Image (cartoon, rainbow, N blue to C red; front, side, top):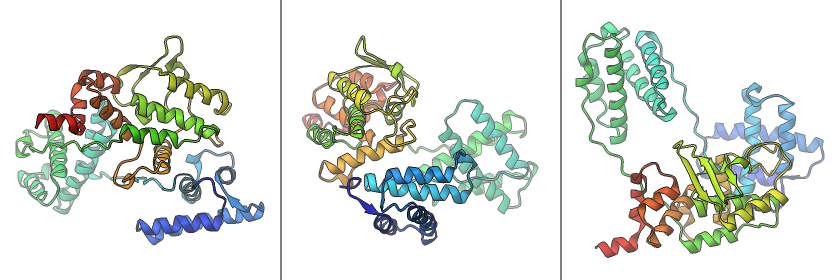
Length: 400
């Protein structure tokens, strides 16, 4: 099992390089990782370290940081740390999660500056970061179209330019067309409301009838969830932490953000309840502290959690003992699902959110009313649970 066998640096880097090649990583990107591994190799040789593991990685990264903040590092130094972290991640979980790099868009010229003002205005409205980034992406495409047609000032903007841009969306996906039209309509309305335009040109932007269909949630059966829980080695400090976090997802349906952000103040031992404000919805929720879950948390706090003054319950198993982050929890759940030997795992999602979906499916099988499931999962509206009705095949067959 990965994470338990001893591996030389050559062995682990060979495995990771083969993994990158299987995913068609660009050779230039792989070369960046290999350059980082050369420095790690030199470090291990200087300190006469034969085998690579998480502890070796932490010591090496500390030497690179040299008491500086990560944000103060050069691009090359950050790449070296990233190159080391992927080795630890692969050795522990057998996979490397993808990380998207957000592209920086430049908005120049009079119209570009107005788009930037519009994005700032949207931010003051309290819109989500994802919504604003979508506006940024699609309006940058609009600006590029205008630049290619030498429309450099707002006074040069004409109806034909707006219609020309819209007509050019024909080959895009339905979702892209919908998001582009929405962003453009909001921007034109902003220009009219702020009196940069004398007339409201939003009538030129057709309304899209596109409606996103909710994907069928990935679920695991009650027996598969038990196989997952039994795959955790609760004798080790890390296992004690992992089982407590997995139980929070499997038994209570908590999201990864709420599990990683769980604080001591959220657990009310006197009433055996958990009180928290959900990070995603900002809705307050109260859940029962089940005996099985309470015992797991106590076991971790007494015999597994590193000494720390941080208010968060779950910490990294290795130094530095910081708050555990959501991607790490995803890797942990994925690792144990694979260890459990559950069939068709490669065709399913295998993070903590799949356990949340599974809980909804189990509750449906038990004929639990929708309002109760909605309350358990912390949905602000019953509509958020409607998609789970599609996974209750037994009831659907009865309807048929």
